[in-house]
Length: 237
Image 1 (cartoon, rainbow, N blue to C red):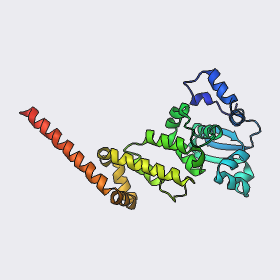
Image 2: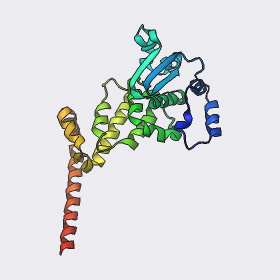
Image 3: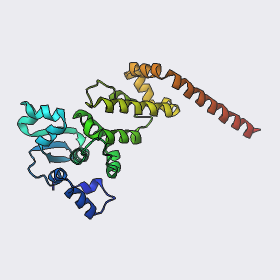
């Protein structure tokens, strides 16, 4: 077996998993490794796939296998910076998702577990048109005060990431909404200090574009702080 998808679907029975595999010819080919002709090499192991399918769903794979690049000549794609389970999950979703409106809710836990590498793979191979909704939903679930600026920067349109401009705009908006909604926690995190040092323009542009919302947010924070202080004084009295 090329991929054991039960690792990504612990909530499903063996029978349900088998039905899911059999319901998709593409997924069945991937799981069993039938006629696979390209190998992904990552941290922890190898996994095989089909260059014709990959070239169809990703412009990056399309260019990679069309021209005499290393991957085309060796039939090996080196993803040594990524965990093999994340690469397998990426391929499973790529093979089993028919369109970008498919949420794949049964894979939520697996996507969250491997979110960083999964996101990197989606960006690297520009598959927003196929996995856009999965990425956006996962982004909402996985943003924290420590990583929101990192993903905000990576979601900048024109960064050469996902080819789907709508997906990138949506991801950027998701990050901005999170920062505004959780501004008190964000400004208390070490991440904002790093962001201001490494990418002052990104922070500046965000503040300029959102100064009205930030002003309101700061007023709410100060109001909450005054209420807490008043409560403490009353308790001391």
